[in-house]
Amino acid sequence: MKTKNRKVAPLVSTPRVNVVTLGCSKNIHDSEVLMGQLKGNQMEVVHEASNIQANDIVVINTCGFIDNAKQESIDTILQYSALKEEGKINKVIVTGCLSERYKPELQSEISNVDAYFGTNDLPELLTTIGADYRHELLGERLLSTPSHFSYFKIAEGCNRPCSFCAIPLMRGKHVSKSIDDLVKEAKFLASNGTKELILIAQDLTYYGLDIYGKRNLADLLRHLSDVEGIEWIRLQYAYPSGFPMDILDAMNERSNICNYLDMPLQHISDSMLKSMRRGTTKQKQIDLVNQIRDKVPDIALRTTLICGYPGETEQDFNEMLEWVEDSRFDRLGCFTYSHEEKTHAHTLTDDVPQQEKESRVEQIMEVQQGISYEINQEKIGQTFKVLVDRVDGSYFIGRTEYDSPEVDNEVILDAKTDYARIGDFVEVEVERAEDFDLYGKVIK
Image 1 (cartoon, rainbow, N blue to C red):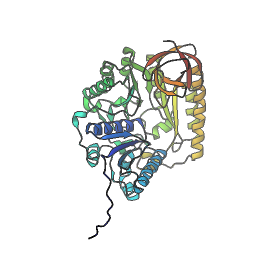
Image 2: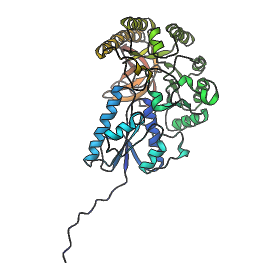
Image 3: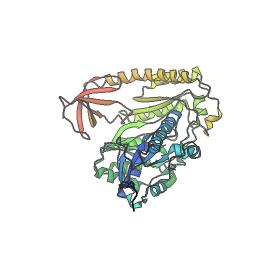
Image 4: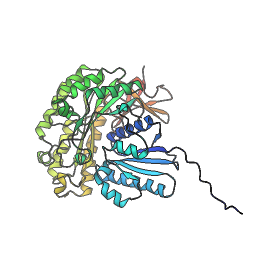
């Protein structure tokens, strides 16, 4: 009796989880927590690996904030879905803000994704992959950033009613982490070489109201400042309404709290601020900026603005442009308005043409470029403490305490004449300056 030829199935190795992160620093943090849990479950995990493998489970952590970010997330899901169809990867799992906001639509339109999860579904996501959520890993993460700095999320969600923002739809109400848990996390990071904590939340200044009954960011800062090994603590995403001035006292008291504040102000016209439901006025914002600078004269202020919000007139825009010229922010980003479903502003008419929105952004950024150039010229001959982030060709790239990674100025050192190590602090004398870069030499 003849036997039939049979194809022998290849041995299936243990799945590798490839985490792909899109969007903001909060998503980076969430991906790192996920990867920490997977590693704690003895699973192989990589972040945005370029070498895809047939046994890969790809987890895409999506962004759903504005149109461009949503499109990037959809394109990425489609890209990996196609790879799955071709047999080049094993599974595709989608999580994050886009999935939280549009899960039914995504399930209908991209049906070959194995599972969709929202922003607060980590235990369920882990179960699907074959892992358990381990409470004892609280605060432990597998960093995707260079080990010397870490995005440090102190709260989730937001209670603010801003008309243009869909974050509460995707992230829910504000929930603060406890000081004890955050200190534990900071100690874990410091023990693994982290020197800089970049504090993030939808609104840092709301921290503590839900669990301590008061704005408690200053107290948290002092506790984090005491963690051995943490040399810089940086504040991002502070809301102007109800701003707790005592955090500036902590900044003045502690040398490892950077003289840096990222405070998105969004606009300056009273009519725009009212329609945006920002809970403040032009004069209050001007006064707040002046008070912050009076209290911490050496502070670097970063802000972000929106151009083309519904009803923004030429007069509203010119008022903002003049204010930017007068305020001379150290750092500034500007974005076109995105008409987001289910937000309050979506009930308004998106009446500023896209081309006009983009023109207004360009005008704001042209003014800011000139301001940044002038501020940087004043730094020539000065010496700054610089944290070395990376090597780029024949140059070391670093930052001063006045700069956050990815979005702010950089310090460029010639590796042919200067020696530095990634993750080290060096003293640098600035020799020349451009619009957004400083060039210097290591003096010690």
